[in-house]
Length: 493
Ligand SMILES: Cc1cc2nc3c(=O)[nH]c(=O)nc-3n(C[C@H](O)[C@H](O)[C@H](O)COP(=O)(O)OP(=O)(O)OC[C@H]3O[C@@H](n4cnc5c(N)ncnc54)[C@H](O)[C@@H]3O)c2cc1C
Ligand SMILES: *[C@@H]1O[C@H](CO)[C@@H](O)[C@H](O)[C@H]1NC(C)=O
Ligand SMILES: *[C@@H]1O[C@H](CO)[C@@H](O)[C@H](O)[C@H]1NC(C)=O
Ligand SMILES: *[C@@H]1O[C@H](CO)[C@@H](O)[C@H](O)[C@H]1NC(C)=O
Ligand SMILES: CC(=O)N[C@H]1CO[C@H](CO)[C@@H](O)[C@@H]1O
Image 1 (cartoon, rainbow, N blue to C red):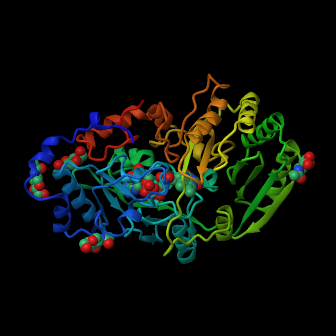
Image 2: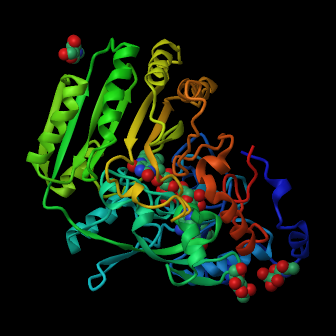
Image 3: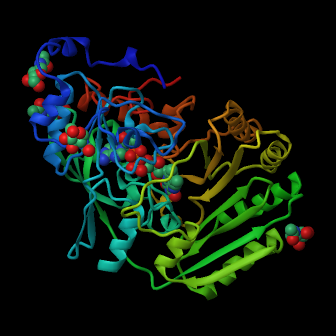
């Protein structure tokens, strides 16, 4: 997508030096690595990303089964002047696991998805190819343990733990990166290093929010929690199709005010669906009695919903329900695809959304004509407020910086046909209807909802942590082996 050529330090000299002797593919196969190339019949399927707006053509895919395979693959790529990108669950919004241009050597963790539990430490060690649904199931079924992570079962641990990892237990237990106690990382020169607060603490800090810029994580060790006996699943639907801009602003404003003091046991988001229907839901990690009291105080300010759902549920049923009822297991199933563009706004607690901004958003989506092949939703995810665990850390505790923040809002549009440019314009317009009315506010963005068109992404993704990340990146990957669009060190625009 983006021209990175000017920033590349891998020089042509490398390529030329090897023009006559050997090839990348023979280096990989001579090292006993399992690979896939464009001649394989499975190639098209293997290189089609979740978001079909993108399709990069890698130089080859490598399927490591152990850490040393990752080292060998990197060394081959370096010898032939080829850049390297890890691919775990493949659920990047911009196909970033395939690199950001053709010709990347892609290291797929399809065959490295093992999970092992250490009962003495109550930690789990997970390889990057494991997917969230399978992790939740195995932890629950074999060990009675749980982790805070995102909703979609197909998302991979590799990317999710690289940039954040938010779900409905994150206000209680933290982001996925906040549960990481140690990691194994392969550097640009193929060296394997172990990271924790006491081993390579700089790199340990950097991978918790910007991992793909520093190396390839081959395993994460995370602290776990006992599976809750039950949680309270709930959803309130406000389904007035004629929801006026004022009423929309009042409803979201009430939710926001209430969210500012909500206890950390509450996991919640407000989904705004095309047409204006608002659904506020999630799960509460406490008793039904406490939940009813808490919900009562919300509904007193929002007014009564058109539909109410409140049920005490087991952990796995709750995880399944928040995913719309589809099964958690991904084993033996192929991925879905989507054609979409999304943007995020991370809202500081000190400058909550104003009624004017919310009302401008509602006016915009009610009055803007879009192709009927396009559909959209907005998610107002409560990350901060009350005693949220996400906000309990200072902004420089991890590479992920947005701690004193209330919301992550996601604006998402998908198309049933090839992506129309009106879709990009529409999503940008939803975001600017808010930001144009809050000019004094510095909004962030979330690097797991990657937006390859985002201007000012250095600051928006990494805020005050960018300079330290950039200095470290230069030091550990001086030749840009892992360089790609929106990795640390790539140009902003
Ligand atoms: C349907 C859907 C639902 C989602 N729901 C949520 C949610 O509820 N909460 C949330 O927080 N996010 C959510 N996300 C965003 C998701 O967290 C990110 O897209 C995440 O990066 C995907 O990880 P992956 O391994 O599947 O992706 P990949 O495309 O494989 O990788 C994404 C990025 O991480 C890098 N990476 C992958 N593996 C490694 C590794 N081993 N070492 C270093 N870098 C690596 C890749 O190079 C790439 O840059 C969702 C995304 C989708 C598509
Ligand atoms: C790709 O084709 C080669 C040569 O036929 C084969 O050895 C290899 O196993 C194939 N890779 C995959 C992933 O199918
Ligand atoms: C939803 O509830 C509101 C307020 O009680 C009411 O005015 C509206 O007609 C209801 N909408 C539907 C679709 O039932
Ligand atoms: C590999 O890179 C790391 C980080 O820059 C460095 O500390 C280490 O010495 C390098 N190893 C080799 C063998 O060059
Ligand atoms: C200059 C250079 O990088 N040469 C490499 C060419 O490829 C061979 C085989 O992989 C390497 O051993 C050389 O170092």
